[in-house]
Amino acid sequence: MRSIAALVRLFRIRFRIHYTWLFAIILIPVAVITQFSATYPLWQRAVLGVFASFLFFVAITLRELVINFIAVRRGVKVDNVTLFVFGGLSQADKETTSPSVELLLAVSGQLFNVMVAGVFSVIYFVLKDTEHIMVQVLMQWLAFIWFMLAILHFVPGLPLDGGRVLRAVLWRLHIGYEKATRIAGWTGWAIGLATTAGAIVLLVMTRELFAGILLVVTGILLQNAATYSRRRGQESLVSDVQMPGS
Image 1 (cartoon, rainbow, N blue to C red):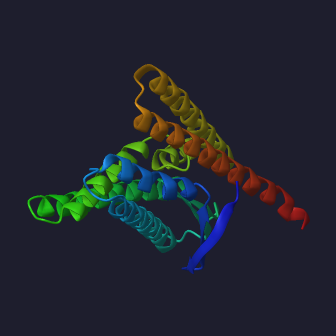
Image 2 (cartoon, one colour):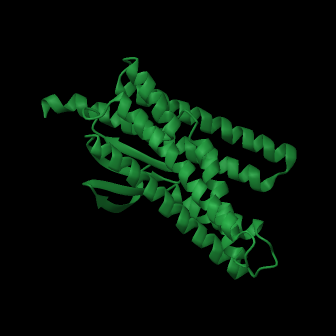
Image 3 (cartoon, rainbow, N blue to C red):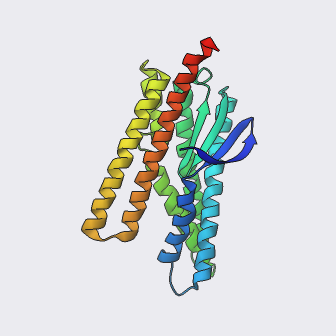
């Protein structure tokens, strides 16, 4: 469950790309190629799909840069950030953060999601009656993806924004940062499992191949990301226990 590459170092924070991006690099172009009008050549649809993946990655990266810039400005010491296909997981020093900061960062992430979806939607409507059909469809796709992403982030499981809210609430109830992280992580894992199971039922019952595969992948990625989040919380706890004897 490790990150596959270091991305950049900014504000003394190391950004890494998680392997879940491999699925996005494949799935987004395939979705564009299969769902876009076949009247356009395959190579054009492939280029459009690759460009859609690139823009999606850039937007996710900007999202995490904004969130962690806010965190640093609030005095939080963030060691590293792992970029998942639907967001990021920050490895922060719990002594410099608090439930209120966690809640602020979760709200900031959701506002960014809505803003990006709105920007793509505005560009789409501006180009709707023009000859730039390829760009128009690209913006429509990206707006749809980001609206779906915003809805997904309401799920109360790490590393989604809803999971950060759940962790903040549990932390505020004096459950403790590490235990709250584990609970939010297990919740995300359970919801991911339920999503995967529901998607399989959808595939069998309706034969909706594209929607079913998309939901299966989403559920699996959420399970993996939630497991990663929970283990990072456990690693933090082990590190704290070992520190006095170091």
